[in-house]
Image 1 (cartoon, rainbow, N blue to C red):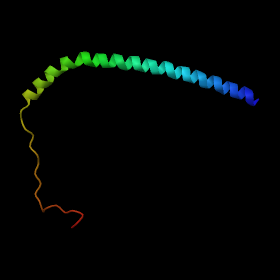
Image 2: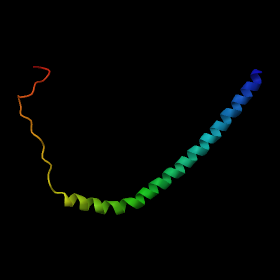
Image 3: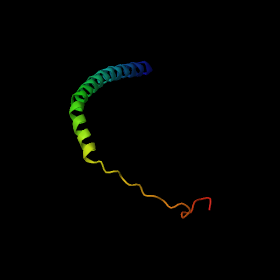
Length: 75
């Protein structure tokens, strides 16, 4: 009984390894396609980004805190 179980487990482990290798190769192919697509898109997106930054030259004002008016843990 144990030898049959061991053979079944070995065959299951072998099929899992094969599936893992296939999936890993598919992931590599998809990652390469994604990287190629991103490289193709980036030059088009870079130009509008510079235009957007030029359209908004307004500096954002930071709120100032008054020192000494807030309680801290040391107080």
